[in-house]
Image (cartoon, rainbow, N blue to C red; front, side, top):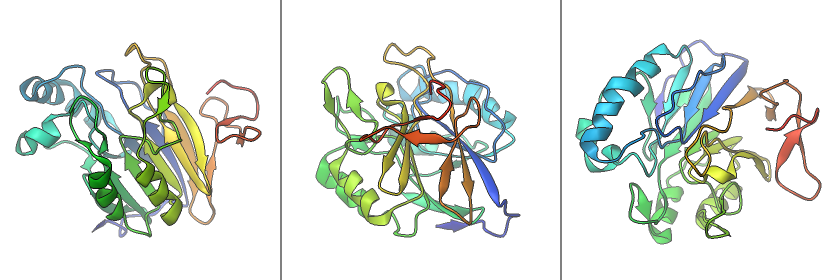
Length: 252
């Protein structure tokens, strides 16, 4: 795991979570860390994706004032089929590896259950091995596919589509924060024991911009505190459920 802990540390860190932009390049709220959870391009095919990353995504990354860390998604085949062609960009890309930044151990992995054999699709046994690589001292876990039972309910198949062994691994290592996307209808903030899990999908099932980036605040001395990105009020857990809502009634 790359160690950049020598950088100046921030006691309270604001994190912006974003996934599944599919060609949209939204304005990012002020934050210390921007987490990107995959599915960036509006097109498919290695050459078309490469052109889009060079023309649009790389300049957008240059505009960001926050540290940017991300993974690829199932629509980002360039990273799986031709990783040698991925351009140098102003971010830290993670693929089954990690970085220590601002005192937090951050790990990233792009894999999701197999569906039409898109990028980083895999069977459960293969993924279970990948999840076993996640260090036990991980604080922030960046994924593309959400864990089974949390932000993974597909309105098409009307079933939970996430990896069960991923849920098990999260329950074992208890990271403070997990960020994913992939299932657009799963947008929201969930709770896995002590872990906050964010599905930060930006677009809806029609691939239209529908959701805001999710903004969270971490205090290094305490557990993760989640706040509404609209009014800054605390989020509260729904009765008997794992979904969090704004204490002031904002729709998140």
